[in-house]
Length: 90
Image 1 (cartoon, rainbow, N blue to C red):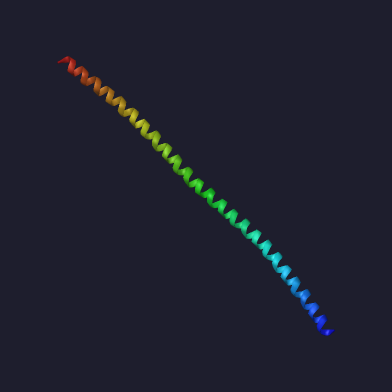
Image 2: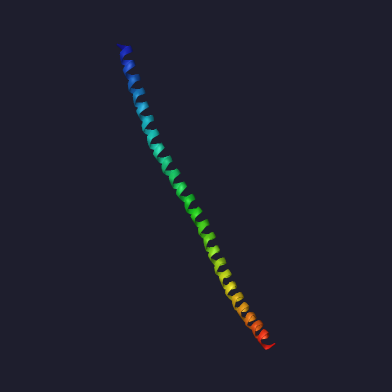
C-alpha cells in the first residue's frame, strides 16, 4: 500500500512536471518566434531605409546629369550656329 501511494505521488508529480514543462516550452517557443519576427521586421525596415537613401541619391544624380546635358546641348547649338555662320560668311 505504501508503494502504491508512493507510485501515485510520483506519477502525479512527474505528470505535472511533464505538463508544466510542455506548457513552458510552447509559450517560450511562441515568445521567441515573436521576438525573431520583430527583429526580422526591424532589419527589413533598416534595409528599406538604406535602399531609399540610395534611390534618392540616384534621383538627384540623374537630375544633375539631365541639367548638365541640357546646358551642354545649348552650348553645342550655339557653337553649331556660329560654325554655320562662319561657313556662310566665307
